[in-house]
Image (tube, rainbow, N blue to C red; front, side):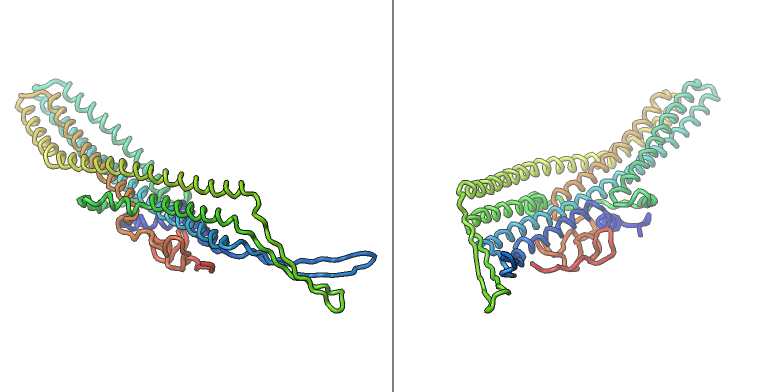
Length: 427
C-alpha cells in the first residue's frame, strides 16, 4: 500500500509489478521459453486408414505414420528458439528498467514542481513585505504611489505563475499514476513528501566499459546475433532429407497382411537451399551492423548525459554556495538603501526578482542533475534501479520456476499475486 511516506523503492516495486508494459514483456519472454520445447520436438505421429472397395470392402488397413526431420534440424530449430528467447529476456529486462526510469523521472519532476512552488511562495511573501515597505514610505511622503503599484503588479504576476505551477502539478500526478500502472478509475496515487536522490557512483573511469558490458539493449542484440548464427546452421541443415515411416495392417485378410512403408524427401532445389543460407547470412550481417550502430550511439549518448550531469552539478554548486546567498545579502542591502532613500523601488524589486530567478535556477539545475543521473542509470542497464533488485529471474532462455519475475517481490507476477508459473518441460 503506497503512502506519502513510501520510499522511492516502494514506488518502483509497485510500478514493476503493475505496469502493463512490463507484464507484456514478461509474458512475451515466457511464451518464447515455451516455444523452445515446441521447436525441438518431433512432429506428432499420425494415424492412417486405408480401404480397398470393389463391390464390397476387400481390405481395411489402419496404420501409424511418423515423420522424422533430417539429421540436426530439430537441434538447429531449438538453438534458434533459445537465442530468440534470450533476446526476449533482455527485452523484458529493458522494459523493467525503462519503467523504473519513467517512475523516477516523474517522481523527480513532481518533487521539483513542489520546490518551485515553495520558492515562488517565499518570494510572494517577500513581495508582500516590499509592498508594505513601499506603503510605509508613501505614507510619509518619501515615495510615490507608483512603488506600491509596482509591488502589486509583481505579486499578481507571481500569483499567476503559482496558478500555472499548481495546474501543471495535476498533469504530473496523472502521469505519475500512469507510470505506476494504476487504472484510470482508481484514485490518484499519494505524492511522496520526502525526496531521495539517485545513488550512482560516477567517479569510476570504467563506467562506460560497464555500460557496454551490461547494457541490456546491447545484450538483446547480441542474442539476436546468436539467433542469426543458429539460423545459418538451420539453413544448412535444410539439405538433409526428411524421413517418414509407417506401418499398416489389413484386418480383412486372414492371415493378417502387414505393410510397412517409408518415404524420404529429396532436397532437389539447390537454388532454394542456397537462397535460404544467403538469407540467414544477410540477416546476421544486418544484425552486426545494428549492434555496431547501437554501440556508437550508446557512446555518444553516454558522453552527452555525463556532460549534462557535470554541468548541472557545477550549476547547483554555484547557485547554492555563491549566487543565492549573495543575492539574499544584496536584497537586504537594497532594502536598507531604499529605506534610506539611496535607491529607488525599481532597484529593490530587481534585487528581489534576481533572488527569485536564482532560486528557480537552482531548482531547475537540481532537477536536471537528478534526471541526468536517472538517464545514466538507464544507459548503464544491468545496474538495478535505486532500492530494488534488478530483473534477475532464472536467466535468459530459461523458464521461470516460481523464483519471481525479477524486479519487485520474489515470486510475484506483474499485476498479480499468484506465483510465477512453473516450467512445463521441454527445456
